[in-house]
Length: 257
Image 1 (cartoon, helix red, strand yellow):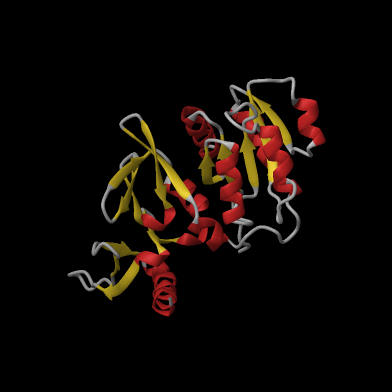
Image 2: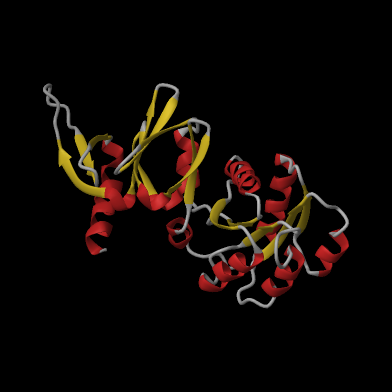
């Protein structure tokens, strides 16, 4: 079975927090979701982020009109970075389009951004990635966050904090060491989005690979063979027989780490 390519990683640069929040939400709902690797509210913070984390963003989604140096000046500086991420301008103003493409921007989106148009821009960025330049999936996931909604707010949960995800009725419960979140996404969608950072232990549960602590055989009263896995928070989840080898492999990887 071939492994899907690592997800595209984006740095969001906009001086309006609500604009960044909306863009992050749109990215998370794409058929091929884009991971938000970081955010910045001005050009200086964005450049500092990129210089401190070379190669950790594949694309910068960049507003043009911001306090201080504008997005066009930042895009010019981004071209000098090595490796240089692609730039997609996201702006309410259309008059800068020619200059944007002179700066070799991958695309130019106008606000309010439509989901379909954003998907096209991200597809173009994927095609323009140099062969073999994408960071390994584990690196992408280490800096990634999962966006969840709670009481009208969008919260970023670091992928590294996830213990498990379990389907219950119409929802999926995401569990960290300190909190539980209820998600509308399907378990299959989450499995595709999180990639190798999780393993499926049962048709209704995913466990973070790094959170696996113990695997025990727990036969039922009628003698039917059963298994359970303990995650970092101490909870036990049922493991289907066909997934036992994958859990054992995760245990070996965790002990090596």
